[in-house]
Structures are given as structure tokens and as C-alpha cells.
Image (cartoon, rainbow, N blue to C red; front, side, top):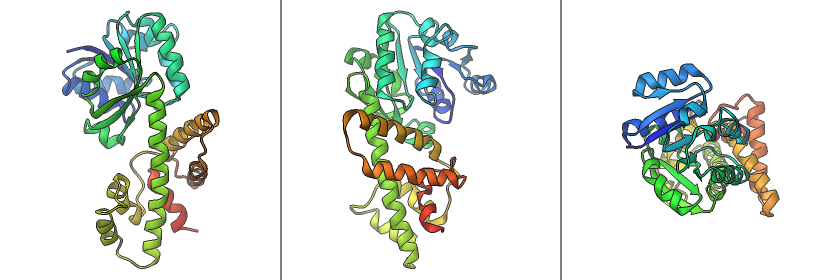
Length: 290
């Protein structure tokens, strides 16, 4: 059993912290900007909550962060009330935020100055994966630090792998989001085409999902897309944040992302239609309506 802290109890962090306590058997102290949610988590899981990230991190062997973006991450990690102010030498900071590779390298360097290990560890699997403790975790950092953290991370994961040095986890997550965006646009066009052609889409999706076109998105979103149901899952607002990270990184490394840039603009149109909190499969909405 390890002494852990978890910072950020959103739709992902709340169940992830819960698995650290219930499945991993670790001691867990949480922090959330909305104190009522931290109190609710502590009541539900039998853990503790703290008034600041620093207080949550004091004495912890491992501190996990899962917040919104680069600036949110800096706010909870750095400064007088940040987690690094409360962490001891030899402890490990694991960041599960989907953020830039740049901020991962920045925080890894700051952590190293006080003897704290840092792993950038964004996750894939969505809210369902977090709730079921079945996330895929893509990590960047020192192998020795990763080897210490991996058994603890596995409390909420089904797969975890070190991808390279600091920032490599975030870069791998960018690849993941680029691929998902392309899959969803293709699936949207296929579903819309099939419906316009008068096909039984339940039957179509059942048969083609067994072949080369099959994917997680088809298995889990094809049916709901054909029904026009989007009030669940990974929000368009979050995907646009992630795609902005991908496009910014591409500007730095010279990669060409023409389809990703176009799909990002399609998502902007979904936002304009009031669908910022719709699931990312709502791309089909642009095709199914005028």
C-alpha cells in the first residue's frame, strides 16, 4: 500500500482516484477546486480530502494530477500551494492530464530539481474506461521512475507502457487523438451514407464491424450516431482542446495534418450548433442536417 494523492476529480479523475483506493488498496487524499466534490469523494470512498494541492501531497509517495490543460496543470503543481511544495524527495508525480509535451518537459525539469520523479501519463478509454478501471496509459519519463509508478497506475488501467523520455506520453496521446478524429469523420460519413441509401444501419454496422472497417468507435458509437444520440461520452470541447495541442505540436515538428485541421473545423461547427458538450461522434450531425 502506498500513500497517494489525487488532484482533480472530474469525470475521469473521480473514478480513477476511487480505483486507487478500492482496487489498489492505497491510502488516498484528494483535492478538487470544488470542495464539495472532494468531500463527496471522501465520504463515498473512505479517503481524505485536503484544502490545497500542497496539503494533499504532503508525505505522499505518489501524487496524481488530472486537470484541464497546461495552465491548470501549472496552477496545481507549481507555487506555494502546488503539489511540488508539499512533495518529499524520492516521491513521484504522475500527470494524467492530456496536455502538451512542452509542459511535461517543463514540469519534469522542475520536479527533478527537488528530487521528485515525474511521469507524463495521459490516458485513453474515456469515462467508461475510467469508471471500469480499464484505461490505456501512455507514459514518458525515466525508466526507473516509471518502474516504481507502474504498479500503482495499474489500479485504474488495463494497459500501461513507457513510450520514451519526458513528453513521449503526451506525444503518443496526440497520435491517439489524431487517429480517433479521422476514424470518427469516416464513420460519420459511412453512417450518413447508409441511412441516405435506406439501409438497416444496425445490420450494416453489425456485419462490417467484423471486417477490416471495425474499430472501437464503430462498436461503441456507430449505433448511437445512427440514432442521433450524443448526450454522453467525450465532449467536443475537450476534443478541440486536444486537437489544438496536436496542431501546435505539428507546427513545431513539421508534421502535416491536413485532415486533422479540417476535422477540427468541423468540430468548431458542432460547437456553433450548441454541441460543445456532445460526444465527439456528433460529427455526423453536420452531415445529417442542413
